[in-house]
Length: 509
Image (spheres, rainbow, N blue to C red):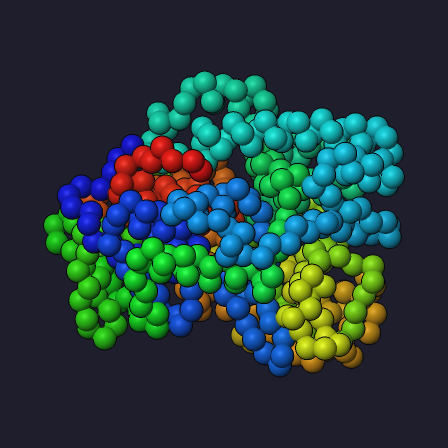
């Protein structure tokens, strides 16, 4: 594994996202002098918080998985995650709602879940579920050790034994094909494959190795920190401060000062120079190259072909008085045209004509997030990123600033009311819509919060590494680098980035 060259005593981390915070904590544990500079007034990056009209919303991820990975970050400095976060294990993790009116609760306990699958889909499908649990658990253990929690500089860094085992497990087949080998009912097939969208791909395009996302979501368990997911970066910041990390909020880094093959400092927008032995960059990796590093720096080898960005999403946050007894904390509402919806977003650059969407009713688990008599609803709908939309020509461009956002907001609410959220529109106290154009304005390349799609040529050693290819002391962290997208992976990237500076650490995960 390549590591930084030269002194590493003083480290500046640009950005207080989850990856940057995890990296800062691990560097503090290794005795480094760490300063985090964040342009926003609070930590979290994408995992921010919005307070409006007495309602509190998470502005980024709403699903929290990988509890052992989270605990590992706190444990790096001898802290207990339970002392810093009040975590609720969600039961069910999700409630899936299907077009035929049936529902399926996704329960982390496999024995109970087998009973739920048998109730809805029959005993044969429950047997398939138990086989899938064994497969997904073994797949996660293999990938975590051999691929996810290792810095990979080149294809030959992959362990041959792990590759052979992954191939033998069908990891290089298509995800939908592998899922179909366990399940026959279209409802269970959807529940255990829709997570491919998190990786930026449709289930019929993604590799089966991404079944590990379904493992984290549906088997390992989903959690909710009281106060919302923004409580996680707040807790990480407090732990980092306790262990000596310095923070500078509300200050924007203009550029990284480079002399020869080394970064020497970061220059703030006000002109102040902050000297550094090592610079860690937490903004989206393509944006970090574009905005902070010298012009002409290439972040992707030409031989890997064109960049492919993940689809984006529209997020509608509603504070409303209407409450619904048939829903859970997390709800997936599947459209009738499951595969067609993915193709519309990813390949045609269009909005889903019959959308599948996620509705999170966080105030169900934490009533303090809404005023008395109120409920919070966060609706996430897949949407084309700005690049895929633009490729279809000016006549097909999705014009979010030109009125599409208002029209689509009404369409989403209408879809929800047709799917059982009766009276929702009339009960709304406050509403906020976030579109791909808003994500782009916040600094996310291609207008997607999901960064690079996890295609074969953007996965593992082919995904941008955590160490700059030519600058000896510039390190990257976050979803644009290895291992990839999602809260657990961002936290793992913090460990990988720290190890580029300290060398491999043999401490527990």
